[in-house]
Amino acid sequence: MATSDSSIAVDQSRSVAIASAQLLRQEMSRVLAEISAGSLSIIDVLTKNKSHEATNRLYLVKALESVVSIGKIKARRIMADLEITEKRRIESLSSQEREELLKSVKAFV
Image 1: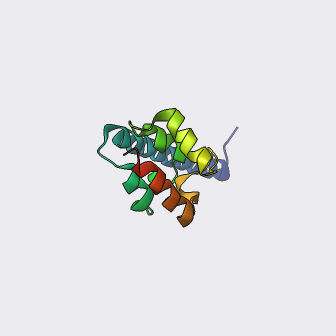
Image 2: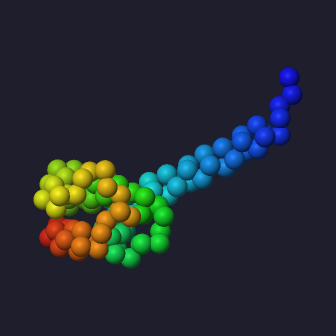
């Protein structure tokens, strides 16, 4: 049974998409590791990296949890106080939410 050109093209485009997603996940993991190590500040993540795709695609809760002085419980408490759901990504934060978040995070950093 012969494979058609269209199925080969679909397989190739799928492979490209999978490779792209893997690279994005690796970059996101690297960003979280840098936040955890202290070489990248959560304040920088929230203010300066608006064009960085890996940073923008991160869930806010994961980024906050990575900060050593915040941790899981405080991260969720901060987000609950600001009425930000745990499924929010950094890219979807409004400017007002970012400002309120920065005020809350500065107390811990």
